[in-house]
Image (cartoon, rainbow, N blue to C red; front, top):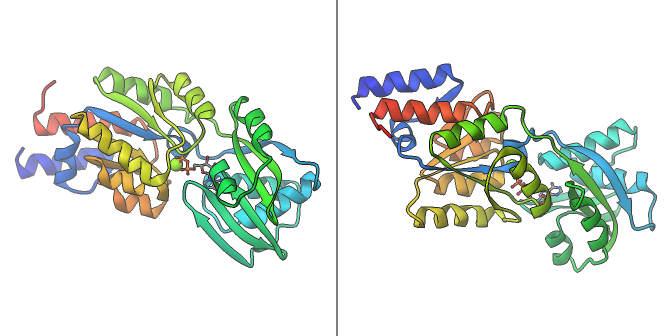
Amino acid sequence: ATPAALMVGMGRGAQLGVLVKSAASLEGASHIDTVVLDKTGTLTQGRPVVVRIITSGDMAEQDVLALTAGAESGSEHPLARAIVAEAVARELKVGKPESFTATPGHGVEAMVEGRRVFVGSRRMMERQGVSGSAEAEQALTSDGQTPVLVAVDGKWVGAIGIADAEREEAASAVQALRSMGMHVVMLTGDHEGPASRVARKLGIDRVFAGVLPEGKAHVVRTLQAEGRKVAMVGDGINDAPALAQADLGVAMGTGTDVARDAAGVALLRSDLRGLPAALGLARSTMGVIR
Ligand code: ADP
Ligand code: MG
């Protein structure tokens, strides 16, 4: 394609709410045959809500929620926002954490009101030697919820079940990608249960679940080793290495700055239908006929 055609292509992208950062990104987009989508915040709205709390019986439900919200108040993860919102809705006093560390793909650790609070996945609990949460976790995942486990002062105290609806346009965007002949894959740090449930609903047939942030880039490399040209779509800090590894990184406009910086394309309105539109546009601009 001529430089003029590239400029026109990038301009059309902008009309679709798709920001293409460079001519090289547009070029890369024209060869994509595989689209890998993050789940939370990408295929789903990323506006999850707390639907259930199971406690170990050692602490009142409201206290578990208040301490967890205190620990999560420093995190920008969608699950953290859901927990803080629920505590606020119940008019609980949410304490500011005295210290706070987030581990992407695992959870957070914080001191809240003099108590040591760990919040996150099973792996997060295991790393701290906390046990006893398996049954509650199982109850939530089998219901399609994402479980957030909570330990206080080294002891498991509760599990918070969180549900996140799919984006309205997700199914039609996946359908459009498939009708272009794209291989569509879901890649998520979340559990197999909620992940396959969303995948089934959206018509995605290949799922990689329980994947850590470093693992996401590895999955992209594995697909590339199969000879595929991979576009990776994500919103979080945890997606940045995979966005950088992919032949084309695509960031959700509502996602984190880190994700947008690592990507060659941004969906400004976070409308997933911009993706098949952009890939189609890239093909026609570059004169790739399939
Ligand atoms: P996804 O790949 O679907 O965007 P993430 O990699 O962000 O998901 O998170 C994977 C898992 O790590 C979550 O399902 C959750 O169990 C845990 N996790 C990560 N960050 C947090 C947090 N701030 N609070 C609670 N759990 C978290
Ligand atoms: Mg995400």
